[in-house]
Image 1 (cartoon, rainbow, N blue to C red):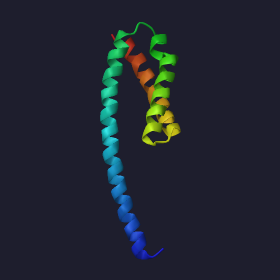
Image 2: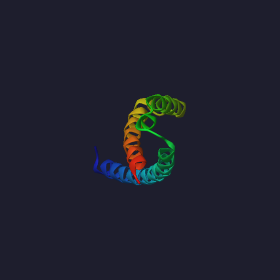
Image 3: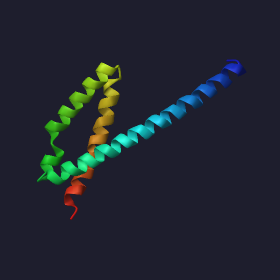
Length: 100
């Protein structure tokens, strides 16, 4: 690869990374919104089983895989991301429920 091509690739990569950072900031903002909602939901539930709610988790996964497919996004990546996020939020919600 010519030096000019490498320089152009480096510039493009830097621009892509800036765009990714912007998307990450938007995602964190949405996670913040989701956290507020989860905190509220946790205060309305009466036991740990209602927090874990495996049937609800699977409905969410089905929904996000469908959203991903309709948007041309890899549903497996979306599912794996959501399963990790849901797991973290379940632990968060369990802590919220135990707060005085």
